[in-house]
Length: 231
Image (cartoon, rainbow, N blue to C red; front, top):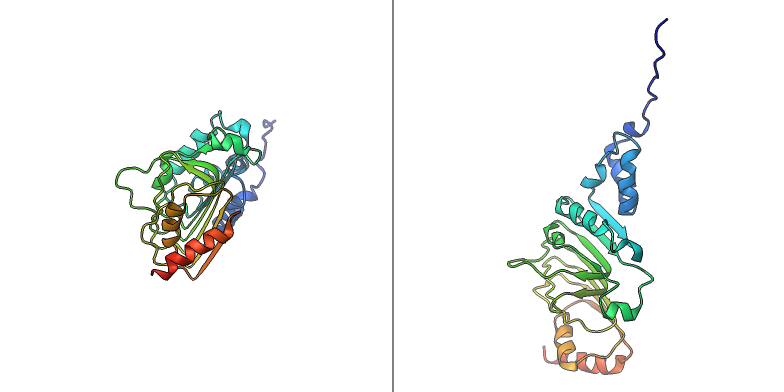
């Protein structure tokens, strides 16, 4: 009698088109995308070559290995065009002020030179590497409660079209050349130094549409108008 043999079942997942696999994976959080490696041979490590990544973090993940996983992915993410990283939604303003609840991004993010869309929420940006010329392909930038380790921002993205900044207070943002910027939104909660914030607004004075939201809106509008009149 011939020994019993287990017949392999047809792998329906492996027969899916590559474009469909990528479309499914880009809709998942990074952790779920990584788990798909166990589904099928076709899915094995496919997430590493995704053109887009989304990562939503919880506080108890911060001290673990997740930041190292993210850094590893970004170092090998030459194809990534869209990146979304959102920190712990339960973080308090007190913790954020002390940078305890912010997710610390790895410097490997600067290797993602093909980024078209970047969305960061409750993150701490690493220091800019020497000679970094910005993200040449970036068209959309959304920063919500994002801090820089050096408190000195220089946003360099010559193809940037849309900019959204939401923050508790002014973080010292500065601009390089943004000739294509057409839509800017600035939402601040606390009062900032008029001179510094005025220079910041002057950097976006050429955009077609600008939206400003703040608790001291009249003062900001007066300041912004005075800067526009000098152009």
